[in-house]
Image 1: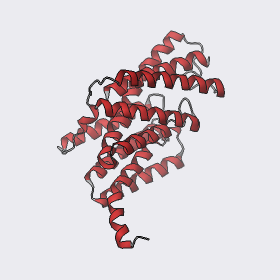
Image 2: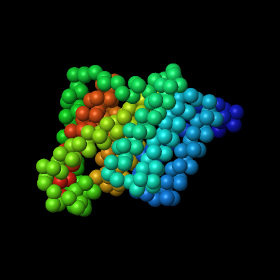
Image 3: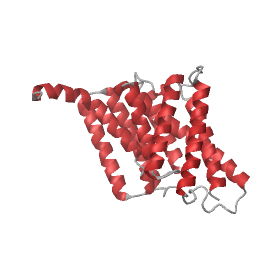
Image 4: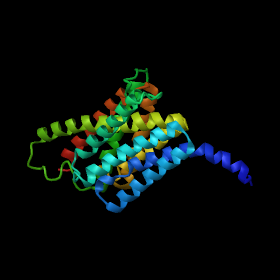
Length: 269
C-alpha cells in the first residue's frame, strides 16, 4: 500500500479537479422543483466545493467553482423567490453566466470567458453528426413515449384549448432561449473550464452526466430521461469539441428541442 507521504501529493493534485467536478454536478441538481432540503444541500455543497478549490490554490478550480456558485445562486433565487416558472431556468442561467462574464472581463482575468461563446468552424463530418443527434434523440423520445405513455409534459398540460400552431410557435421560441442557456452552461462554461482541469474526454463525460441529472424532472423524465439526456449531452459535447465553438451544438440543440416540443404537442394530446 502507498504511504501517507505518497498519497498526500496525489490528493493535492486531484483536489482542483474534484472541487470543480463537485461544483459541476451541483449545477445539474434540479433545484427548480422547490425542495428546501435539496436546495440547502446544494447551497452547502457549493460553498464546500469553493472552499476546497481555494484551499487547493488552483486558479482554474476557483474560477470554475465561483461561476458554478453563481449559477446555483441564481437558480435558487428563481425557484424560491420568483416561485419558478417555465422561463425561470433559462433566464437565471443566462443572467448568472452574464454576470460571471462581466466580472471576468472587469478583473481582466488571463482566462477569458469569451471563449465559451466562440462560433466555431465547420468540419466535414459535422453536418452528419448534427443530423444524427437530432434524428436519434427524436426517435428515442417517440419510443419512450410509446412505451411509457407518460402524462402530458408541463408545456402541453393545460393548453389543449390553444391552437397547435400557436403552441408550436411558443415551443420554438422557448427552444431558442433554452438552447442558448443550456449550451452556454454545459458546452460553453462547464466543458471549457473542465477541459482545463480534467482533459477533454473526462470533461465531455462529466458535463454530459450533469446535463442528464438536470433532466431528471424534464421531458422525458426520471432516470430513463436522464440517461437519454446524458447520451445526447455526450454527442453535443463532441460536436462542441470538433467544431471548436458553440454554434453547431446550439443549432443541433434547437432543432432537437423543437422536434421534442412538437412531439409533446401532437403525440400526447
